[in-house]
Length: 267
Image (tube, rainbow, N blue to C red; front, side):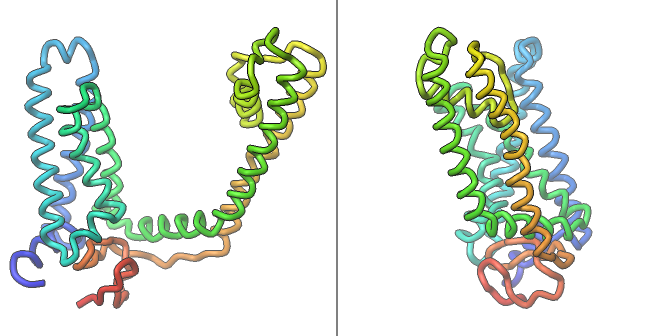
């Protein structure tokens, strides 16, 4: 990568240089202002008085983010890899809602998703270790996937059985009008949410509900323990804001020789 592409790659993707840091700070302020604009736009009195101003500002921000996204694609060797990366998808999601609003009225509020782009603050503040720590959490979640799947399957079986029994015990008289609705009650109870919109009236139903509440407290701790165990097994070295020239993936170690996502060598 040579010439202007290399220069702009350093500015857009790297936060170690003064120019790159200024770029990210300006970008973060633009994101904050735009998210605030989306929120204010939903206030009826403000929308009535300043609706036209909101629309012009929104298209201005959308144009800015679209230009930034295209520049990111233009300054990496493998644009498709960047486009399908986490930050690439977040950047794309930041500009799609405005254009989607032209086709689906009311979908403009989805623009608030742009706040996800504030994750780049880790780079601006040189919190590279946080990027590496997020990778550790992702690895732990992947390692826990099989155990959590088995756990969720067991929970689904439990709420299905209890919901069916509760339907037979209580019946339509207590608003348990169907098995699916009874299963909904079981899920609300076992997760300790307790909306209270449906409640058992019979003694047997109340005993069953009490058992589900106690089981709920035990169930909550299981996935936490599974993921916590995997986190304890892993360790993560300090990261940096270094980005791959090919795919734009960030969070590599300062001494890395290859990109952990696409395998491209660092020059």
